[in-house]
Length: 121
Image 1 (spheres, rainbow, N blue to C red):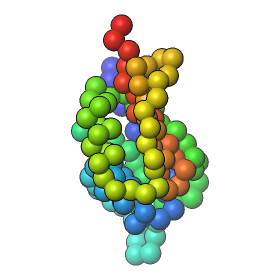
Image 2: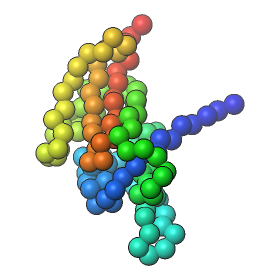
Image 3: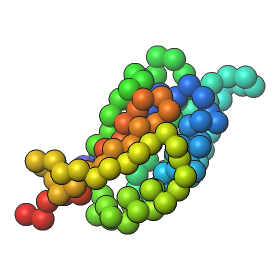
């Protein structure tokens, strides 16, 4: 049996969401859905095997959620993201009791993604 979890992140502005998730985090849009012209967007963005759904529909999820993401390319990801100009996040690496290092990004809608480098046990 296999499972895959895909978090849904609430957004309020498609342009700002794409600026953050595509331009800043380096993700791509896999697909977008609207029930018609002028309706809210529901889209999938991804980077490698990290997949997120972004929803402009009220009631789909709660703004201000937090997603915990393990990565085996922590330093590379941090260096890549911090090399891009994005004035709304000042990223810092810190150490958590459960990991070697972590850094957190916050999207324009107060959703958080905590990138984690696991301990080598």
